[in-house]
Amino acid sequence: MVQLPSFSKGAMGTSNGSSRTDFILLGFSDRPQLEHIISVIVFIFYIITLVGNTTIILVSYLDTQLHTPMYFFLSNLSFVDLCYTTSIIPQMLVNLWGPKKSITYGGCVLQFFFALDLGATECLLLAVMAYDRYAAVCQPLHYTVIMHPELCQKMVLIAWLGGLGSALILCSLTLKLPRCGHREVANFFCEMPALIRMACVYSKVIEVVVFALGVVFLLVPLSLILISYGVITQAVMRIKSAARWRKILHTCGSHLTVVSLFYGTIIYMYMKPHTSASQDEGKFLTLFYTIVTPSLNPLIYTLRNKDVKSAMKRILWIKINGQRSHELNRKIRV
Image 1 (cartoon, rainbow, N blue to C red):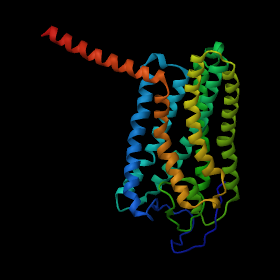
Image 2 (image 1 turned 30 degrees about the vertical axis):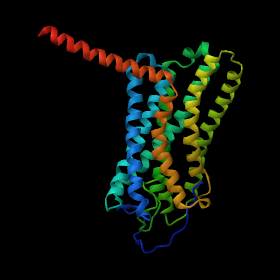
Image 3 (image 1 turned 180 degrees about the horizontal axis):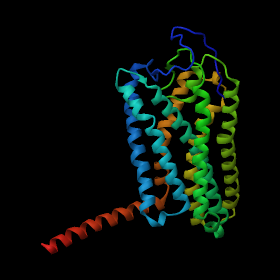
């Protein structure tokens, strides 16, 4: 749980309230020898994230055999990851490569809002995907009736609106906190814990709201996911077909791996007492769930999923044959 320290008006300035000046993203400036290494690693993971998640979205859209609830949810998850990383990484790379470490007030607000919005949306989407796997494994004969397109669209809409609502609440409360001239953000992007630590007053309201939303968007979805996989495990143990057993493990294993990576770091960051870890540890954990996890998601789903790999081969085959047919028709006309 994020705690709010008290600051006195100090060297950073004495302006009252939340002045709309540029912020300074400290990031890893205390370790300049690591900045170039980190920037290269971040750039590589960003390219992987862009290529991997875009591929999943395109393949799921172009291949009709993937027009199923599972890949509809997966496409939304990939879109969330694309937007999430793009709201953070470009500004981060600019600061790592350049002498300035600043970000405008508006840019900071947008970063903060989208990080909260998309992070909360992903929490709910992962829970929705767990329910989809439960319906597919435990109710296979009624799966198409249970997971009909209208229900899938409503669940995704609820996930997006839930993320939006939580972001609006936390943004409005956090940005109203007086900073007494403090401009230094102790992270590489405008994240909620870093912005709250800039405040020069203690706010019990924010502490309660953060904890309540943490329960709603972290602990409740995670509990539903664990319950779903508990029921799935019981169903799998009764399956005698080895082929079907392996297929279930592959599809559910991919989702469970993503859940473990995402929820593990998020819960540790947001639900622990802040005094139990150093700021450096927080930065590297933040780096992991903002940079590494979104790039691993497409790799986990494609490398462990024969349906996606088969769809990619079909699309490439159609593309190659289409080009050959076009060239042949052009030669015939000539």
